[in-house]
Amino acid sequence: MELLDAIRSRKTTNGPLRADPVSKEHQKLLIEAASRAPSHFNSQPWRFILIEDETYRQRIAEIGGQTMTQLMAEGRFFQRYRKYFRFSRAEMEQRRDGILIDQLPAPLRPFLRHIFSDKALALMNKLGVPKTLGQDNTKLVQGSPLILAALLTKEEYKPDDLSGFYCLLSLGMAIENIWLLCGDLGLGIQFVSTPMEVPEAWQEIKSLLQVPDDLELMALYRIGYLPDGAKRPRIDWTSSQRKTMSQLAYRNVVSPETRWPEDE
Image 1 (cartoon, rainbow, N blue to C red):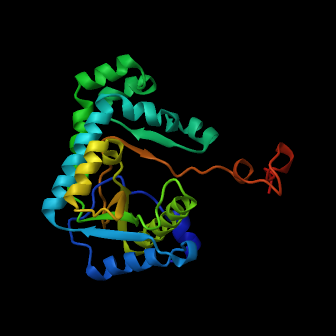
Image 2: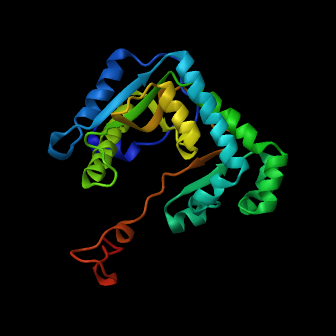
Image 3: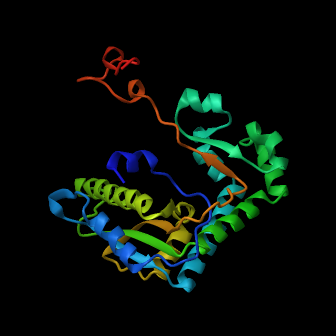
């Protein structure tokens, strides 16, 4: 795959993955790709845990589902991410960011635009939507044959120091290398984010994975081979839209006059 094609086709896998184990050859290639990312003074502060054992994956999946249910039921999920939700293609075209909710169960569609209100939250709780979403999340993570944990060495990662910033930059680039290679290898990948938003849950995962004191657990990703003709999840979205050059770039200095021209 050409690099620019890989970048343009990069995407997140919201749906299920095949149960087939990710081959050791492909696992090795993913870590090699990560290791080729730039880092400050070639410090290479990243470390990775490749989690295949069903017991560990099952518990991480349960925590993922429980935290999804909790965040949805309490309204914290919507409060945090409401600014990114789009409800029509026209709105998506105008904003050119966020996610377009284009797949939703029929009982919820009439409430789509009122999804952030207290009344809608109460109704969703009454209908058991948070629990359903939590169960769906558990199944997705549990059904992923490989979970990748990304960590940073505390020798380099000091959040209150510039080294912490450098480490985050380099980890982001390492993960992007993994993400792009997944597309080339026929793998899907998705960030498992909800446990991070509940401190007790994140601590449980750190204990489960026996993360030592000299490492900081930063993120989890589920990975597996993409199935043929898989159905979309019952609640799903698209997010392929991108801002235009005139929305993103300036020449030399930041001012309305130096924006990248719309017609170039």
